[in-house]
Length: 150
Ligand code: ATP
Image (cartoon, rainbow, N blue to C red):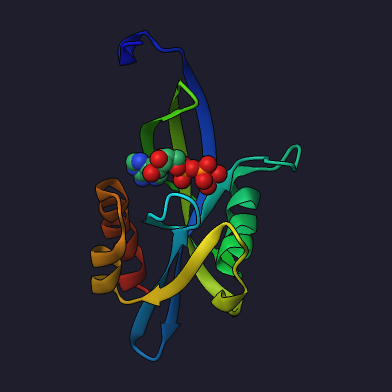
């Protein structure tokens, strides 16, 4: 079926762009998705198995599950990215809300099965590692908010 004739579903996820400050160095949490293997920021479907969950709650829960760490939201307004993908013949238009977060506690080694690897990376490494250009663009915006605080 031609792409433009497919039914389009909507999907909404939320996640975190998490930073950790140590002395004057800032590192960022990036994870590798277990199935599609792309390097992304931790995220997941809003309210997946948790009725009535807010975007913020989903984002914090996903950072804890996929990143193995606890973080706090550092900026109220999320950065947003959108993309299309095809799943079992259905075209999905997805919106993902990413909150800028500061690391609080925990170890990224405790990430769950949804992620094959989790890493703390420098700004330069994040830009080399992220798989999607839209995520890189969003990161460039988000990191400016942290620069002012370091
Ligand atoms: P979630 O973590 O929100 O539950 P998921 O694990 O089901 O999502 P996605 O990570 O959204 O799935 O991946 C679904 C498809 O979209 C994959 O083919 C993936 O490569 C693609 N994809 C993921 N992130 C992006 C992006 N930022 N830009 C474009 N395509 C993306």
